[in-house]
Image (cartoon, rainbow, N blue to C red; front, side, top):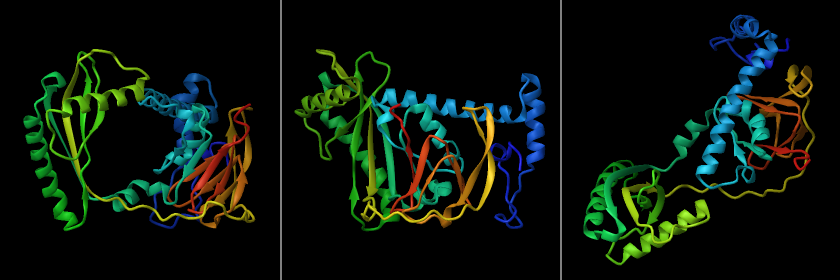
Length: 320
């Protein structure tokens, strides 16, 4: 096994039956070397690491922008990794963002498909209808909301039958002259003239929550209206969070992993996720493999499997 096995996705023939697409690691390494490594004077390992680092930094920058736009401190939140590639990148991304907990749920590699199957039946309708709160027209607002509701109900009832439904409503609002709107919840009833004041108060609460201040005496405008009709989402059954520790199973194999801190490679254990039961704990660096994806546990993290079967990575010494 070479230093590039992890970066290039070395396939273990014992884990992959006939009919699945193998990766030609040697050819992938040659492509990296010829296209990137030779021009930049890098080894194939550093070329591969550079590609991965650019991808991770782009994702980190996007997350930083999103958190600023939402008025959130990203380091105060946990990172949930799902999708075929996300668990590969999650720990490194968390390091860049100062996040101390990463959660990799069961079936993470097909998380979108699982979410699609478990998601409530829902349909959202958005309509543009400009209106200033100083000239609030409840009749016009109620007319467009009723039209949106009828459209959404027709779609959802076809799949939901007589199931109970919820109908969250919102408006996209901003101060006059601003370039971006924020989403403000609306009451699930017909609006009245008196609601102009309530909508302004609701807008200012959301605005202060995002930007820590309001703009006194500035006019507020509504650009669009949104309504979603949905079945009630299923709540996951609560389970005990405290579970007894169990012995870590034997590693399935070992592979070489590039360490950017030292600029060298090291051998790390590879664990097969179906062998990891709730209560298992292990320390990075390590690799946790499964059919749909691979979780990389960097040296900065410890990993444990919780009662729900999630792999939870916890940052070590993050205050240092």
